[in-house]
Image 1 (cartoon, rainbow over the protein chains, first blue to last red):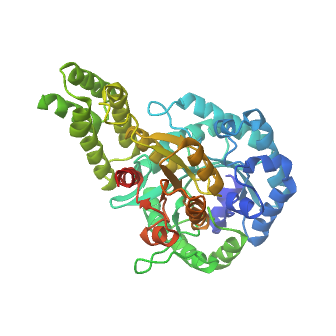
Image 2 (image 1 turned 90 degrees about the vertical axis):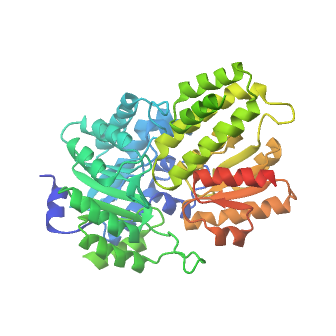
Image 3 (image 1 turned 45 degrees about the vertical axis):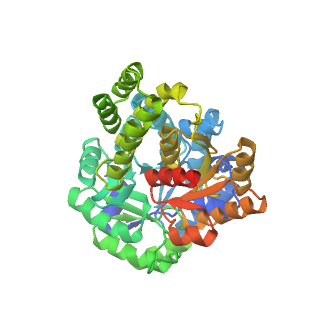
Length: 290
Length: 211
């Protein structure tokens, strides 16, 4: 058994928080590519990883959310795909203490698959395969597919990663809460998504982004009812709450952490943070659910 | 005559691109006015699609197919609109707010606006307020549309509004959208409108331009 799954059998596993919003807070300018910092400012990226490990994370994600060849092409960086992913993996590996883990992050292509869009499933799968390969060459322990709003695209990433052989892959979709329940943007419900992903060999099933920690409690219950796989939940922070029709306000780390307790009680095995979270959120989270 | 209108309406609602095109071609051949086809079938079809989407009965793929059918129909109709009607209903500069890289919602709105006949200039993600305003001036756009997912990035929407006022561009309307945006926030920053979802955004843009 993969040592991460073994850890998850015995305890709640803490994942890291956001990378993108933290990089912005560290001076990443508008229009700059976060992935480029893997070669331009590696020590800064490493510092962020270290802060998450020190805050109590057992797993951090590489700074490669947008480092697939399709997204990079939009920035004119597709020739750097392999380099950016390998370097990102090396940076995280170097920051990673003994006994902890590095997850190679795969994010959406930003394109729609055929026939609605122009990208073929084969091309998407191949692109993800190459990205996952570069991440493993750089030293990651597992692949973490995140923020997928299309089940079909998530499957492309899963198949692409699994082509490398017996590697551990987590697949996390992003759900919207509608009047009729939780659905991906493309209209896939929880049960269908989970059974499809499990059938295709996903080792960890998750949900991240879009929803804040409150909504994630409910979603976790539904995921738990649908699967026996380990569940990874990474809510956003900074989602607004409307009180009597006015005021939006930012969620504090301790509010986030208290929701995380309920997410754990609802059946999550692994919890981290998505957009808007930082090391402080992860520290409170680790304290609350440990 | 009513049949062919109904046929176009159904093809757009069901997102059947080729059927929509051929029915529109038939309608034009039979002597129907382009304006009539637009008003009696296409617009009401997209309204129904928007309503179903809002109710959670259909999802993005269905909406996109309907938008594609609408677009195909519009391509056929455009050369036939009477001169009193401008060929483009309006020009929109769109992008996500400074610091925000979440572009799903923005992309949807862009597609839906195009489907509704607008000319859309997509500035992509993480756009500075100056970027929106300068492009709007350069392109003589009617509307600036800003999208944000995070409470931290939505603040820059206010900067876009201020900059439009500073540059004295009363003809340029600002519409905002995204999960954290609500009526109170829209009012607070003085934006002209906000969209609850993609369809509502398109509706609001139409309203802004018909004033």
